[in-house]
Image (cartoon, rainbow, N blue to C red):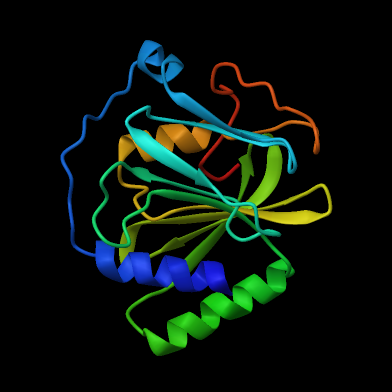
Length: 183
């Protein structure tokens, strides 16, 4: 529930803003990115070295928040968390949110994310919103982006990898088989 509150606040603050970014990110540039590794939950994600990753030691939510240095209030780009609820409960919460915001609709698609079956949710009224729910290792991982419209955010999401839970995840080049679109 706390993650949805954080996402809702960020969506309200980010609505209508645009930042100039390049459309292409060379592979050699991505190789110089920083890597956030979480040994406890067995995942890693790369992000631009000019951004910051704040890891949290709490039980689950959020595990890490990735955002630009010197952000505007409530500005973040990527959150990785674990939710203690089933996919049907996630769908119900999105439906409830839609009731209070009739101009907003959530679209759901089954995708392959980090080589795992996952469920992508986007919003019709906010192209920057992107949330992926990944059932993995008896947990529901959530990788969400408030600024999916930024190429670096999309590229960072493609570098998300699962390793072995409790062990250090290796992190090479982005997985070319990774899909962020429907199968």
